[in-house]
Image (cartoon, one colour):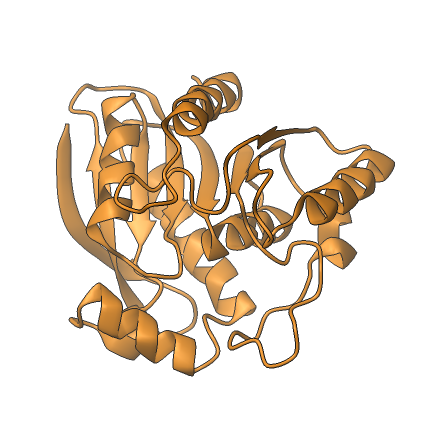
Length: 243
């Protein structure tokens, strides 16, 4: 595989940085847009991007903070964007659209693209799947797809149940039973909504796991849940993104 920094036009006038990883073979390969978590475009997310390439996918992680904090450390960039209320939803969808187009334009692409996101990126993966024509989506413990942010919440986000009818592709959701954002009640509400709309989805909630159970560099890491979660993620993408 190879991995490198690339640049392409994002939403509006902006040019954004992204991390691209891909197998070296001729393909054809499916593509995955990796949406980073709130802490930003960091080494942990780049490692995830490389993991998809090692598993046989073209993968790209756009730096959603490119405009506000180009060249800043992930911590400083995240603080700057958090203080500004987060990434606007419209811009997020535009940047993911650009990332998906970049993947589809690679010579080894099979034309199929999915999206995955973690934490705030989980909500954004759902948002992108409601705004773009994609083949698969994975929401890893994304808060405020369902449920209303508390008063004083620092990010300008809103729940997304009112656009769930626009979900363009099958959705895999991976959650922790001990998480509060999203809580099991929130995921149950999302389940009811998607069932009522006749959408294709699959949810798994892990006992003894809270938020960020995939994060190997944090105390929240839960190996058993993460190992099973990765198995399900690759199974989902193999089902919907394979050539």
